[in-house]
Image (cartoon, rainbow, N blue to C red; front, side):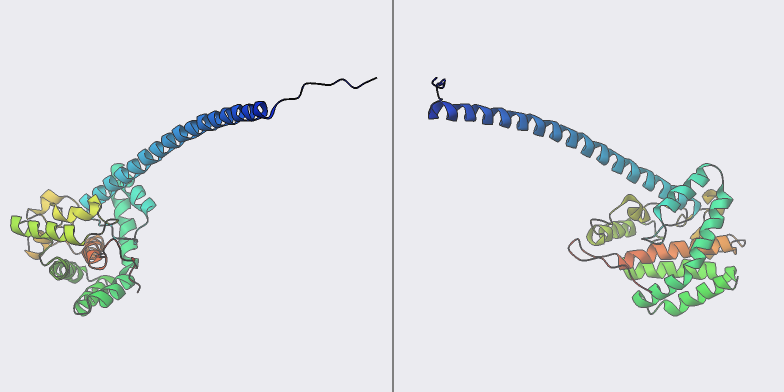
Amino acid sequence: MSAKSFPSESQSEIIAKLRNEMLMFQKEQALQAAKWKAALHELTSVSRLDQEAVQKRTDECINILIQRGWFISGWHTALVDVVDKALWLEQDQGNKCDAWFTEHFSKLAPTISAQIKSKFPDRSPVINDALEAHEQGKYNLSVPTLLAQADGLGHDIFGVSPYSRKPANTLLLEQWLESHLTWWNNSPYRRSIVGPLPINKSTSPDEVGDALNRHAVLHGLTSNYGTRVNSSKAISWLLFVADYGWHQLSPNEVHEEPTP
């Protein structure tokens, strides 16, 4: 009994079938890629929104702390602490916030001293004396000295006082920021030094609330500034101003945080 024979496919038919299968495969791949692209776009959009929301909230928290007289600089204060302590202020726990930052900046004094010495050696002796006065509880001495030296640091860095509200000086400060702030460092809170702050307002002490005010202290409008809290606020302000001095790198330069 002879074996049953089946008609065999021609080579052209096989090629045509393979071509059709390949086209179907490509269509499926294209459809899957489109789905992945849409999902990735959605994920990226959500991530971007989350990042923008986090940045917006961070800037809000930093501004809340500034209005209380606390200034945040570089990597000296963790982001989680910035947000948590601002929340305390929003919950009317100002004394709790002041107590935390007072200890925080008091502990930073040795680091600040070393960094000032490395970047601003001429000012180091005076600032060290002020920090020692802070540690010794001589706040009537530390507060005005730290405020005055922050003024001097501003002149060294910006060429103009960070306290000045004169339009010409404000313009010079804005021009300095435009030419010196790095692309990664150009945040709203970095630029806040241009605007009116409680510490640089030329006004009566009553109008700045619990914040420290340079005008009231150095012009003798108040005599009850000598507290550990105010001295710590002055340290935070000094560090905030000095921080511009060691964050002036261009976008192409490698950033290195100053070491003690």
